[in-house]
Image 1 (spheres, rainbow, N blue to C red):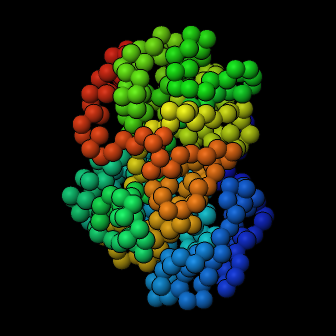
Image 2: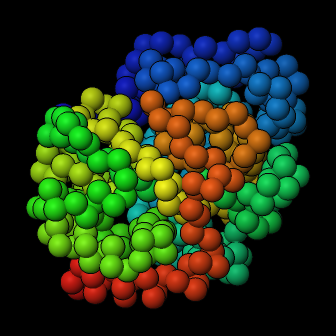
Image 3: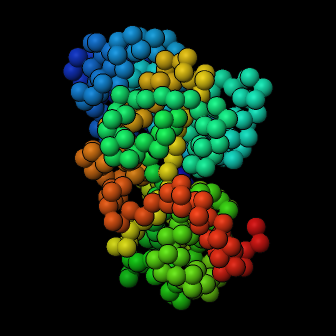
Amino acid sequence: MRKPLAALILSAGLAAALTGCGAAAGAGDQGTGSAAQQLLPMPKVDTSDGLRIDGELIADKALYEAAKNDTVKLYSGTGKEAEDLTDARFLAETGIKVDLTRLATNKLAERALSEFGAGKLTAGLVRMTDIRLARQFTDKGVFVPYRTPSYATLTAEKAWTSDNFVTCYYFVNAMAYNSSAITQDPPTTWEDLADPRYKGKLGVDAITTGGTLNALAHFQISTYGPDFLAAQAKNQPKIYDSTATQVDALARGEITVASVSFNNALATELSGAPIKLVIPEAGVSASAGVLGLTPAGAKSPAAQVFMNWTMSKAGQKFAAAQGFAPSRTDIDQVKSGDYQLPKADSPQFHLFTEQDFAQYADKDEAVWKKAFNFMG
């Protein structure tokens, strides 16, 4: 039923729409294809003196020339479909390839820490979904200081969490429903998750799935009270241990309404599944995705260009087009499919900060498990 967007990118025959002073070398090898063009038109790439994208400096001439002969080695805990899409776009805009290793964040952290301890960590960059692990990586020296060309902007907007890693974008949780099963009076508010008409038809991700679910639980508890969780539990929801599994179940009609990872649900909708996303008036919950440069990355020009591009306007806009919320707020808003997520500085954007994790995560998890009678 589902054809991943990344596969569409790699199989489509359209060349990258690079314009102006010169296309990035090798950018046509995989192109962005029709799927990526629909997500976001290609920017203007100028390689006449380094790398500039839509006028913004990504890499000076020396760094870019060195990076063209290098490969990005990336460890990522972000969903593979999203990472494949990002890496293909990076190749199209810069001509630089990415060697991706994708694992769940906890397993990824174990591997990276083990390899680092043994002096065998070759990954230049690590992307993860838990800011607490990023602090651990910083303390152990796995993440090293690095400043992108956009450093001043990031610090002014408080998007830069540390000199040792960046908030590359935010993971967002919203709502979705199966549009084949619900054709009239669709859900529009978070309170609808507790509506008895969805008894046996509600899908919920377990709070143990990851940090994004800690953010969602805290938002719901702080906004509607702990009884709201118990009210959802009365609908006898199906509880999933994977956001992707839950969204696939929604697409198949095994459940008809759910609180969802926005990026995952958007990718499924754009692949043709009968899913409609809902951004309630009360807003969305969010948590930080982080990206850090390792000691190997400090020696890798390609890794540095990838970090610079990620925090550039071009990289941030493409993240928005995929259904992530950009950490930079100085860019024009970009739609995610037919939807417009609130910006990170909007009152509708409920960010679960690093301090919130420390103060509330364990308490919220206990409340959530009790409400759903969950023993995991």
